[in-house]
Length: 373
Image (tube, rainbow, N blue to C red; front, top):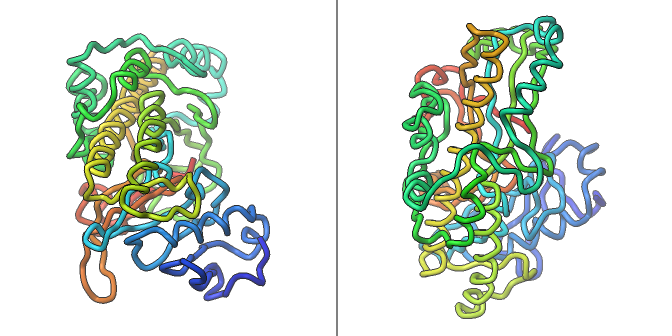
């Protein structure tokens, strides 16, 4: 990216002053080296987002921002419904609630290496991966709707994991306001046999080695030591989320025209949050978030089964699970006052600090683990 178009505000903060139809500045958080490597499309997309109605304070791009659909991947933007704020399916992404979950294995690197082929085979048998992969679980219409409403709580209630897992998942494992009836039959059909599967693309299930500890106190609080291994799971709402995104992009294009919203890019199709289409998308998107949370919970159970074949006493407790493709209602202080905003995060995760009310007691002192996938 060309630096002459940016204003440097600090070592790792760069701004683009409003010009043309931009309503707010654009802000990029990155080192100079990362900025220089960024695609020029990031500049275009982060400034386009700044042109949308009801955006608050700025359009943001994170250090790993790169070209996405409408919003840059690594983009964050908040919108105020009381000021005509919009919601955009492109601002959430097609893989709604794609996220990362980390499990502690209790095994050292040497212990894993000694059985790596056997363990890899067990994991491969238990957790299907690839385009169109199907799992061992098939949901009828009633169970599908219960899953979409209940998320990981539904999965735990069906024997996939335990209640302690829910303490380490955002929203306690289930997002309120999900409306399964706003999810099309086609989307539900695509997901019917895909629960407990990874999918394809950049999704993965990895056994990772803790090579170096940078903060001993926090690592100890997380239960992590050097030479430990962890399991990292990166996946989302599979075909259901993609279908919801596809369908609502079309509906939002019509809504934007209906409400007189000028789109700088058709990929930024959006609707007022308080409109019928906006509310329908929110309900469907929240159902997809619950689908992703349930999917990662089921995969966790299958991972534990695979490990149990080789390490019978291993429990694989959950460190944390957090999504990075969402739009959620959050309360933020803006210009001295608290405001209820709808925050789009696409390829970006929240990061609650120490003492945050939504963190479980075990993480209150350290803050939330930020899982980078």
